[in-house]
Image 1 (cartoon, rainbow, N blue to C red):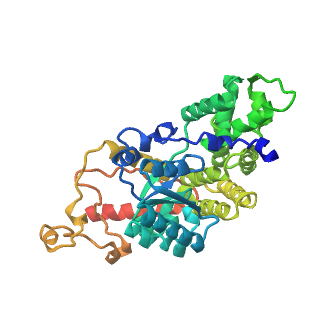
Image 2: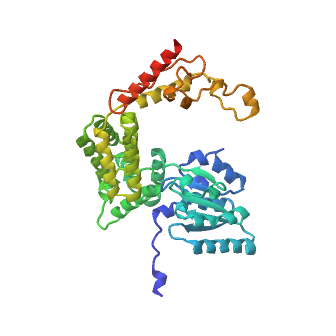
Image 3: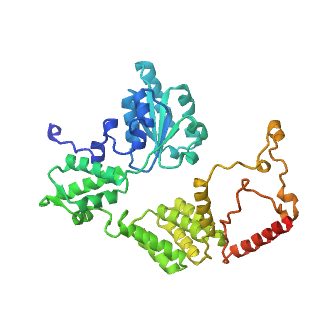
Length: 436
């Protein structure tokens, strides 16, 4: 009888506030706003297979569940982390039973679809093809690399994005009104909460729940929450690294400038400051690759290779082992020969292309795969460089007619670009000789 008086613990805040309709969803306006793809799909009443691709905590599972409600379908969810072929078969049997006994079609939701191997993904194909169920997959990884092409071709990919600051503030107000309507939060506290959430709705709700638990401690008389209270309540230290604030961008700037300035110690210092502060190492890996392209370029082509290798090593090893690779790449970039010639040339060419007229491709550079195009002179008088002295067709033009040589790429006298400059000077001399 005592069970009658036991109270059931409340659900986690993230579950309690899960949207019950599309109108309650915060964020993803590029998909859900009036006239946007998913809004039109829901309005049509005709479901289609899809893959929801985006970072954690942006609403992939929520949208899948709401799809079942919007289309009045049976909803079956499996996690690719825990499921195998056995669970897939059971889901297929349930879908068949729902269809045969109740005449109700099914939505099969596979969370973390990228965790399924090829055979597991292939097991879904015939049933997606037959229409037994509408497939919805969720993934944090690029589906181009992680989902079989056959399954990918049968599903529309929708890219979900992290919540922006305004959306996080809206979600916070909803959570506060539900969980702590009598507690006041000052502006700094709200900003600290949204900054720590880092675009992740689930993380924000978990933070609010941590704060609610801290307030509910016996003896607590807190009625107003400030930034210090938020930082003390969180399990992670949010004081040393203000993601999205001046400190974040200043430290990124300091790291980049230390590499550009060829100071490995300073570069390592700023790298480790950010790692210690909690910045995502994947973000740092992307910045390191950018530095290799922007500030080193062809002066040392090994830099871009090492930067990419470091990023891949981190993906394989994770923290903390993978961070060593990021540190090694940072040191190499700092001591490497520097050149921004390729970066400057690319920016100049891109700016020119964005504002210039649409110039035609000269006939001798055009492709001629058909008889008609050959008769029209496509490819006529083209000189095959490999058949020319030095492997170079001296005097040949590769730009549109009437366009002067822009001279965007100007190699510097450092590293490998010294040799590139010598080679380019030699080729220009051949061009001048051809004109005489």
